[in-house]
Image 1 (cartoon, rainbow, N blue to C red):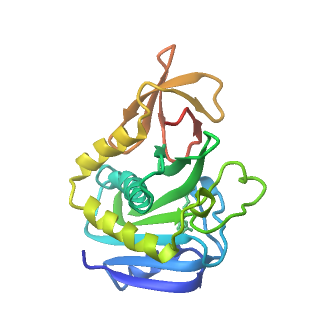
Image 2: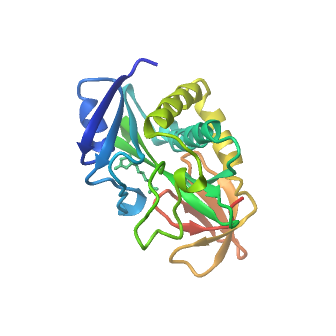
Image 3: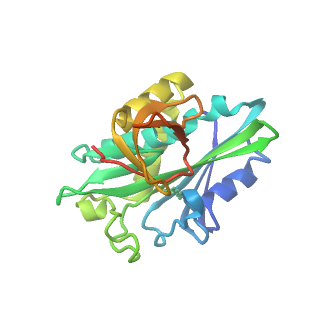
Amino acid sequence: MNFRRFHYRTVTSTNDFAKELLYEHNFVVVTADYQTQGRGRNKNRWEGEFGSNVYFSFAMKYENFKSMEEVAYLQGLGALATKYALKDIAPNLVLVLKYPNDVYVKCSDGFFRKISGVLVEHQFLGDLCSSSVLGIGINVNQTSFPEEIKQKATSLKLLNIDSTPDKIVDELIKQIENMFKFYPNEIMLLWEKELNIKGKQVEILGRAKKFTAYGLDSIGRLICKSSENELIFVSSGDSIIYELG
Ligand code: BTN
């Protein structure tokens, strides 16, 4: 895949830089040592130490604009590539995807903690998508986290795995390139399979009822049904709780 690679010491967000660079290039990979305005899904901040972690964006623009259905698979692609990159670096880790596209790891106390998050941002002109940015953050050598996420986050270092952000970025690029050999519908199916959420009980933030997950629809929303047959579509903007693993 023919992409230009850019590395910066400090950026606001690699996603923003990648978006800007698409004015001049069709495919770019942007990495940084530090982000001053790193963001996650749901307007959350994504903060991390200088030089300790992977702050990565892959962006592409489309000659022929695409529909939402045609770009939905990128959420899965980002999560799968991240999981497979980590699995290659540390084959003994038990890694699971959490809907929509977080990567969790089973820690020695039996709890699953988040090691990576993926933020996919599409640029739309009306109904059509002109470009997409896949932002990936992976905790590598950071060992202390802010109070609010201390119990929920981990890093490779905390799992006794020695690596560097550079090594992981190389692996991530390899895995992303490999994922693009698959058809989007194959990635959607693989994403659904790896999420392993079908038939599970799901709690949706802001809703009292419990739901059962039925799988993904064509734009990557999670189809959920209550016991009274109320059907809802959970999107990447919703927060859900369910048993991982
Ligand atoms: C999440 O878990 O909510 C997604 C986190 C995504 C963080 C990455 S770090 C690189 C890229 N730049 C950003 O500002 N965010 C993503």
